[in-house]
Image (cartoon, rainbow, N blue to C red; front, side):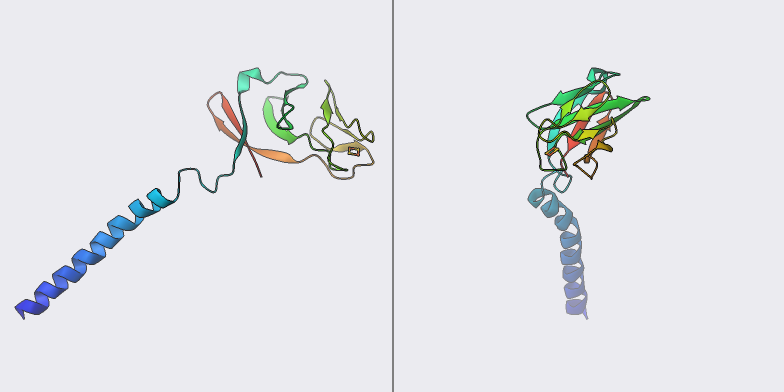
Length: 132
Ligand code: FES
C-alpha cells in the first residue's frame, strides 16, 4: 500500500514537472515574435506626412496617411513588379504607366490588381510594417 502511494506521488510529480517544463521549453525553442512575420521597416507616426507618403524606396514600402488613418502599401507594381513612384495624390509606375490612388486601387492599367496592403503593428508613436 505504501509502495503504491509512493509510486503515485512520483507519477504526479513527473506530470507536474512536465506541465511546468513544456512552456519553458517552448519559449526556449521558439523565439519571441516567431510567426509574427518579418519587420520590413520601422517609423514614427509623426513622420508620416498628411499629403504624399513616407517612402522606403529600398524596401519598396510606403506609409500613407488619409483622414487620420495610416496604412502601409507595397510599392511593388502588380503588373510586372516595377517599383511604383509616389506623388502627392497618386502612385504611378514608371514601367508601363499604371496608376493607383492613395489607397492602392488601380486608376489606370495595365495593372488590374490593387497594390498590396501591408500589415502594421502600432505601438504608441511607433509603427512596424510587417511582411506578409
Ligand atoms: S510593371 Fe508597372 S505597369 Fe507594368
